[in-house]
Image 1 (cartoon, rainbow over the protein chains, first blue to last red):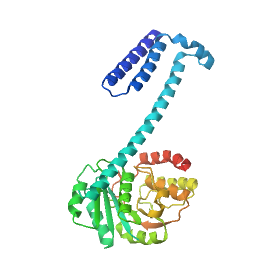
Image 2 (cartoon, rainbow over the protein chains, first blue to last red):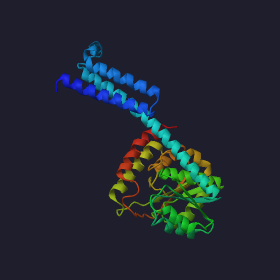
Image 3 (tube, helix red, strand yellow):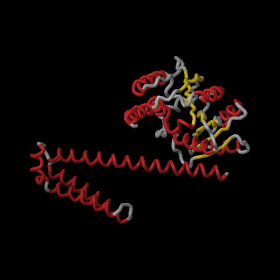
Image 4 (cartoon, chains in turn orange, green):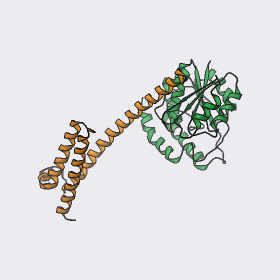
Length: 113
Length: 224
């Protein structure tokens, strides 16, 4: 796989993700804020996929040899952030569900149903 | 002291009724709170049909399965609302013999928390025996508590120490988390020897649950 093929794969992936986001936004599954945030991310992704050389000054500054390596580091950082955010939200949601289920359970007993 | 026996139930349609009948036989004055944790079998229906006219038993149920820890907490809230001073937890699957309940209740007069312990001999599954020993050593070293059987769910405590030992674990790890808090807060406790009964080798703490408990230990250690 040469660099052009990889660029095409990345472009197709980013366009697919952007379209998926657009559909969720239209169905009102995500807020305007989230939609624009992720659209900026994927637009940047597309831009870098087309013009990878734009990152070369940054590569030199960070002592990284290839754009791919920088991409991997960036991806890990984003994934870690998203995982932590998801974990916190899921825990909070679990706590809320637990409270609600308990409340219903106790009220049922009190009302004798 | 008003003591409530809390029985969390999850998919125990074949054993729960028998366990509760055994509990009822141990003491005429015992009050029982049964918490069905969203069973997918007929446990709740069977329990309601068997004990609907028994004033000593309160049956509550979760709409969905939340885990044993959550069911225990629901039982607790109910016990405190009904004026309970202490609670004793016993599993519904028959692996805890209710004949020891009077020992637990008597011990709670002197100690704020009472744990059951099984003597893990060569008849017990190897992995459980050694896993329990290792967990006991690890928790003992980190939290300054010496326990004979860290994973035993037959335990009781008084209302006055509940806030100090309350747990966040909902699935397995409740007993271990509780032990860490007892160690950290230097709460005096007693251990009561109970029978070692293994009903179903696929139930209880599995190797995967044990690994999850291991991951939680640093959080418990640094959590004030």
